[in-house]
Length: 280
Ligand SMILES: C[S@@+](CC[C@H](N)C(=O)[O-])C[C@H]1O[C@@H](n2cnc3c(N)ncnc32)[C@H](O)[C@@H]1O
Image (cartoon, rainbow, N blue to C red):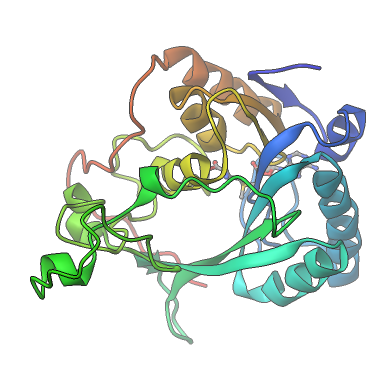
């Protein structure tokens, strides 16, 4: 089996070649079918076609999950319900329906601005799954606000709403908060690459730390800019990504080559620059 690389191709074909149960963690951020401009993939498919495809790749992703494995799926409002019904039917158990709220949202002209995505956290076996609370604990309000002696001194697990605020870019995982101050990867950010929907490393950092251990295999069927693979490498996990676009996959290979062992990027604003807002 190929490892620690991104494969250029169709995830359906690549996943089918992998041994069943090989991955401790699958993170999937598929195209949302909302008309994003990818270089190769057409993000405007008929609903029935998009969902028939989802049936196939979801089943393929579940097949490679280990008995103690977890699957995280990032998805937009338009198809969140459809994906949840499918994952339930595939026999996985929902642990959290995470709402990732980012205030640097997509500017809309005739509806409220888009400022969140859903992240479904599923496990294969609710009685036996990898869950590492300690690397992702945050200070509780009992500690930071109420000086309550009953506070657990090691902090608490994060909430299932992740608040991402670019106004506070240097503050994520700050010592005085229990929310995630991680914005989308905006055009001005140091970690920004040439991909339309790059996930912040901080989001993957939390997911990979909580649901896998060093040496485990992490699979991303839709590698995009390679965030999952980059963070896996930084955290000493084995990894395998698939990306349809040759150009994006080449950029991922360059990104992976640059990485030495290091903590994932904190969002840094390189310079203030104003972009024309996107209209949706
Ligand atoms: C939402 S993006 C993923 C972004 C990624 N999470 C990141 O942090 O950069 C979805 C990606 O899936 C790729 N893609 C679409 N269909 C695919 C397929 N059948 N197999 C593999 N990749 C595919 C697209 O080219 C696009 O780069």
